[in-house]
Length: 536
Image (tube, rainbow, N blue to C red; front, side, top):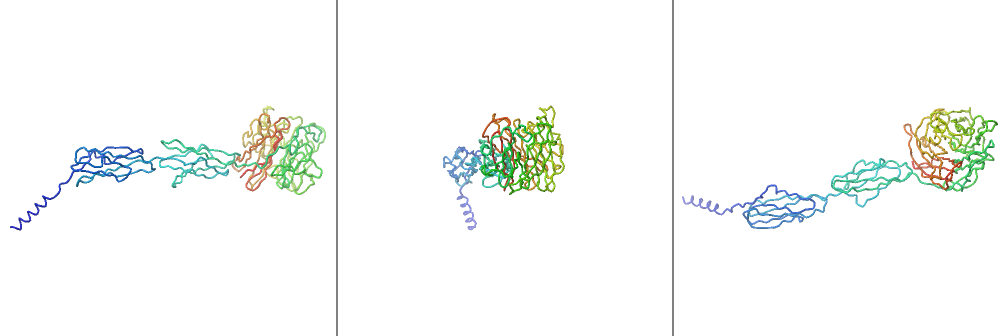
């Protein structure tokens, strides 16, 4: 019995010694999670406890006030958060402890400092060949990048430490540096602009006043004894540029890199009025027969010089009935073997015509004369009240570039002022490829075409018909594929002089070189002789 009472006494003592449980609770359960903006601030929570208490934060950017106190009801605790200067969302825990009560933990969350920037970047550059360029954007919120140019397309992002937006840039075929604006934008931020510059695909090789090479030619006396407008022309021969004044004097040889005269063309006595190249490097030359009268027999002739030779060889003689004038010519192939020649016709008195005269050469010998009266183009219909005409004046003759070594394979034609459209010509039929490419002041057109890796590249030039009004010679370079006729370059030309009238003549020729094309041109009305390199 004594043992039983002893056990009861021990149990009673144990219950008598157990500490009572303290109470600690928030007045509002939602105060267990507090959210602050990036600027920080203060919030007050209310709690009750029956014991002395303390409040602590586990992050230095969180403050509590007061940090301790005595038991009470509706105790107010102010929890403050400093401004967040980081680009991350922040979290912390405030713990209220009171006696042996279960501690109350308050979760504190602060939003990040939103940021969208491109650092110090102001300009991106890319070469003329285009490709991809990356715009690095520092951001921790959603943002967008846009381009104001259709040749610079924002394609997507590459997720790195900094997001890099990929800009797909097309080849620059404008002949000048071009600029696009890339805009980085996000809600709540001022848009940031970055300039994208693309280099030109064209560079100037030389630019000289053509009067340092040949005199500025006005009217000249030609085969039939009449006066007519002189026509300048250029071609390549034996590593030099040949500049022909078209006035009955010998052409000049010019350095292709500097534009400096290095001598006279040697032909063994023949004086050309117009020069061009075939594909074999021969210099093909013509006389000029204006045929201002309907009687008399004034022979039109085609001669050529082989590379390394100083004695010209006659390739063709044709009588006046063909009515070619020799102030323009297209040749394709090797005139000493297989080739084709086209010559636009100049009618007496400038009365409109659309006749082209052609010959096929086989084994170095000309075949039958092939005349065509071309239809299907606008021409000078405003002057003649009907399409399919060009004027007899040389500054209003269509220009041609043959596509093959036979006349039947057709040609590219740049129509005369004021049409200035580009046409495909097969036989007598013209089909428009492009609309007017030069505008109202494009006059005295010329054309040249070469093949590079079997792809045709064609150059068109219009002399400055009205340079006294600020006009310049205009050049456009195209390539033709099976499905399109595409512009690849527009060189920026120069004027050294301004006049008008019979001096409005011009010519252009192309040369394939490593990495692209050299473009040579002469414009008599602005006395400019220039060369450009176009990267392909």
